[in-house]
Amino acid sequence: GENVEQHPSTLSVQEGDSAVIKCTYSDSASNYFPWYKQELGKRPQLIIDIRSNVGEKKDQRIAVTLNKTAKHFSLHITETQPEDSAVYFCAALIQSYSGGGADGLTFGKGTHLIIQP
Amino acid sequence: EAQVTQNPRYLITVTGKKLTVTCSQNMNHEYMSWYRQDPGLGLRQIYYSMNVEVTDKGDVPEGYKVSRKEKRNFPLILESPSPNQTSLYFCASTPGRGNTEAFFGQGTRLTVV
Image 1 (cartoon, rainbow over the protein chains, first blue to last red):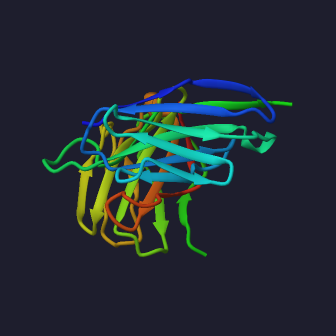
Image 2: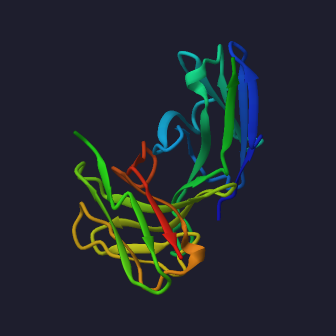
């Protein structure tokens, strides 16, 4: 099945600086890569996603890049603000055709982003 | 308002006492999943359902059951809970088979003593 590795597990940056979180995946058939933000005590919520036919996608201060050859994708947050403090999860879509094992989104273990004032 | 609703939000129970966590969505989504979230382990899929009466095991199904008798409901059943099932549980739904946004419920914090 799919395996998603996410680094770093904790990232502390000064307010206004950029933050980068990286993920790798194992299944070359994966074709959809979302990023979720989870604030303390809240549910995960989608912040940006990218499909395998695109190399980069931007939405204001957030961007995601995808390198299909190397099987890795990254989240970039520029001009970080206190409200960016949260846990961020990357995910990759897998589809189980043989039954058994996960189907749908496989998540990384998460990155705790801390924005220092 | 489009939403996924889980109940209860918090539950403390004793080992071996059967419990059910309910999940309901009002978006007519076909695909629903249950995840557990543990510190340092991220979100791990327990079970998923592609449609009514179609369910299958995810990565960590041991000790859990599910059912999908109606499109909107996907309850998670712990027949004989054990302390290692103490966790934060999330239900999620998507319109199809995962290649669009997954909507999560509010989460259920379960403690088994």
